[in-house]
Length: 102
Image (tube, rainbow, N blue to C red):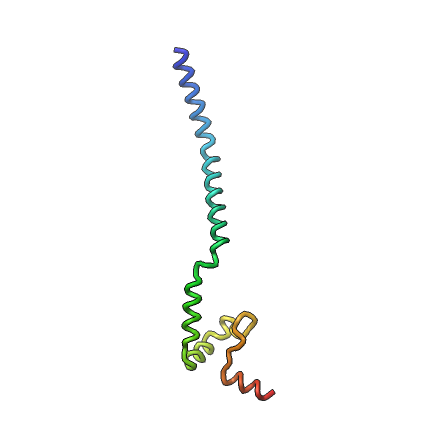
């Protein structure tokens, strides 16, 4: 009879310890997975939309002169073209006329 009571008390104590420690274990597991996710994002985050950039560059290079001029007129200043981050060698008739008058 003492053995049964001792087993029940021991099982209750172990169950209490497990229930008490469960949130801490879950938090450690969640933190571990969040760190792994952050590492993978840092390592491979730049590759997520690269295929769209290449496709758009291909489309831009294959535009006709009229389409390219319309594009530059519509989106040129909005996206920083002909600034420090944009292509510097894009020449239109206005740019070539200005460079020859100097």
